[in-house]
Length: 372
Image 1 (cartoon, one colour):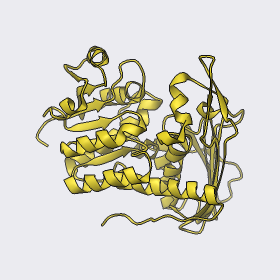
Image 2 (spheres, helix red, strand yellow):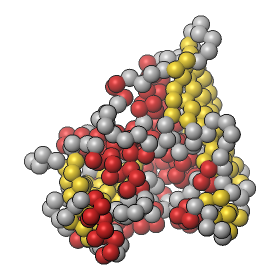
Image 3 (cartoon, one colour):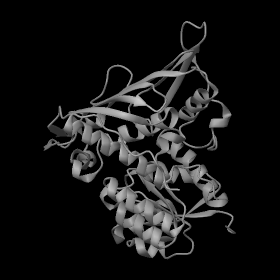
Image 4 (cartoon, helix red, strand yellow):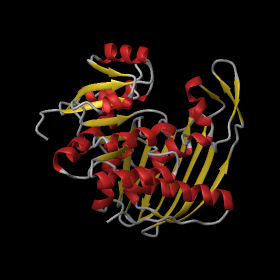
């Protein structure tokens, strides 16, 4: 790429709310590799407002107009899941590099379709599984590779997510209908289990139990809505190395740690804790002990796990900025450091296996292969 900076076009750049406003924009502003070149929304009024808020001259109410601009090298899809297939497909057909939010598609079939298109057109196609970009998650992966705990014997996660409990804000109501492909299973659980498997390996077999304990949910505006999603998710099974694993996510706020992940091995233990099961966007801390050590102690994050500039805002933007650093490397060098559409397909396969296991009560496995 001859340009000094990668031009980014954000589809779904709502100027008043949303993930683009809260994560993508502040992340990109901290990174010298990128410049925000264009934005689009679904209406002329919000497009004009977005241009003012984000300080860009190119703003559209039609994603095709954004995709036709030569200033846009990377198209970012930051909209609700039911629109991912249409918009990511359009970006791929326009031969733009693509960064699409997770879940990649509304179910496995859509994800497979997008991954096949990305391979066909030969463009950089990356997915927002940004929990992998967490400095702490990368430190965990490093320590496991170095043998900090010895052979991994077992690992477990217990987590809570308050926005899938008895009350939600109005903008979260769409997460309570499984037909939208955006639920506790696909979003917080999906991000966390991707980090889990990225560090420890995939499940070779699994069982699952779902329950909907909040079939009616209060909305902060005073109304009530019905929910058909699982707000209790329990998955257990065996990993590729033989370790026993269990993951339990539950809706509502916990009075204890909102996220607790233990990794137990023959020589040591690791403990990862956070305030919420949304580890893709909330801080987590790492403790460990090995050998003769009796208690876990804080394990500082090494600089090798920090890629984003120090000026990057904490919270939602940070892991996204970390992911963008790898997206830039992939675009400039041809590497595959950021999670690809094929990585997303693997995670969608796992989620489909979990749904089948919960529905049938039978143990399931999923295809671990990747395209050649």
